[in-house]
Length: 561
Image 1 (tube, one colour):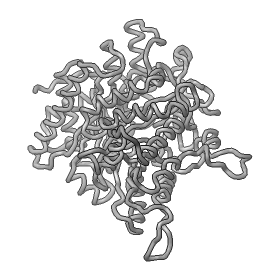
Image 2 (tube, helix red, strand yellow; image 1 turned 30 degrees about the vertical axis):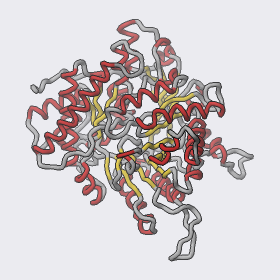
Image 3 (tube, one colour; image 1 turned 180 degrees about the horizontal axis):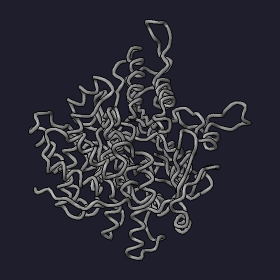
Image 4 (cartoon, helix red, strand yellow; image 1 turned 90 degrees about the vertical axis):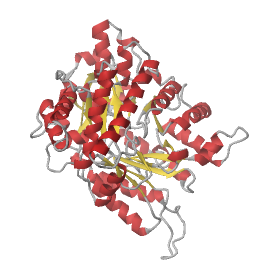
């Protein structure tokens, strides 16, 4: 294929440019063009033809694809921690493994990466320890310990540590794990009956159990047998119902699905899109921006370029310790994802959901990434990647590109986005979604008529079905959070848990994971819907938060970073 160049875009709005300067601009990469050039020279410096380098740089400059945030941050820096998240699995029920996990976690978090760990191998709380005569603290105790390591690291002094923890649904402590973050049930002494949940909503920085950690239960073939048994359900189904109730009420735990050939792939990164059966595996992420691609031929070309880029990333990125190098060499995972999917649909007049045209594009993306990865791995005499595609949340890089994130629908036509500065001061800005604004400007579409994630909170099956349809083309996982109405409302309450559980179970065999977020479940929501006209009047301004902008809105929000 002939490699073509394209014009370089400006940032679509002031907010995108502000985020770039706040998070990624640094010496040698003070502009977007300069960062793209520096990064391409870093990653593709050896073994890649000049025309491919030039085409890759141009594709990045016009934001047809954007590497993961750690690639952007470390462009031109001496330590190149491009592979940005690390996946651990506790391998032995021993005090040596217990202590080693702390070392692995701190080593990885200190490089700016996130971590995930499957704690299922550890014996339950209260089990006897024959060598010492004591009793086991249990996996939850260790997860809390890792959470506190993350709190103290607080990457760069302002970036919240990204941590994930999972436990097998068959583990004796699974029920305790389910309620480990039910902060509203945890009363704090000396506060007049207030719970940890109350205090956390009042002060997002209030310390709470596992508040740096996203948690999920691992569901495997044993659960699937019960879920499909029409004659009757057993204890795993009862646990799953409890999980659904907790997710609808508090947003956690989530669900990690691992069936058939994926039975042992319970390892996940912090955002859960990378899946593995191996301890000390690693993420390696970039996302194609479908909204900036016009033809299938162009998609094929950009997919080739992005795949080559990520493959070289497995050869040049620095890692925190030797075992990660060995596992990366063995697996060589590429996490090539997508963003701008909803904008792509909107531009073509489609509602949010799978359509034949999108299915054709996804087939092209999947086939091209697999073929390119195999071709260039053989050309360079390195191991072929065991997987090539994972869809990350793309929160910040989606803002840079001014498009919808991952496979998420437009969150809201207009919203407030809050962020932490200097580790203690919360600021916020008003934002109008770029995809929505484009429809308003070009076609005179009413802001009130644009379907958003908060509108789709009333139709969660549509969201689940779309995730399953996209998952058919993804060989690892998809990080996607489905917005739900607040717990106790007409569309999300105790009487509806059973129907929600049945609906999710119907799609579970085609999913690798699932999370939902009920409105108002946690303090510190970074995104909160506001009126379009209000946002328009305050664009470009930065406000210092004196009260929680999420709590005062009452119009819906979402957790995340």
